[in-house]
Image (cartoon, rainbow, N blue to C red; front, side, top):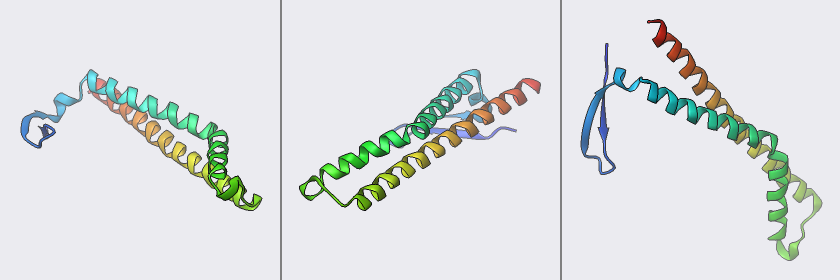
Length: 114
């Protein structure tokens, strides 16, 4: 059973259609595998460097406050929120990359067994 996929160009004009089975070739697996690996790497870097990046953004925020100073409670709150936000984005990227990687590996194994 095949489904048909219609490919459109940037203007929305009809370009061609392909069977979905034709898209599941080695090139497609490599494309998704590379993208998933990049998401894993970028997500893990964001997770492990979230403290450094969050502190940098907190310092940047502090520089643009009136007079270049703010109460330490505000600075701690802003910096902590930056760190948490960056760590959360890293976790999402890492999870999406991991799921895509496992999906490709499982689907590729399923295709080779069939």
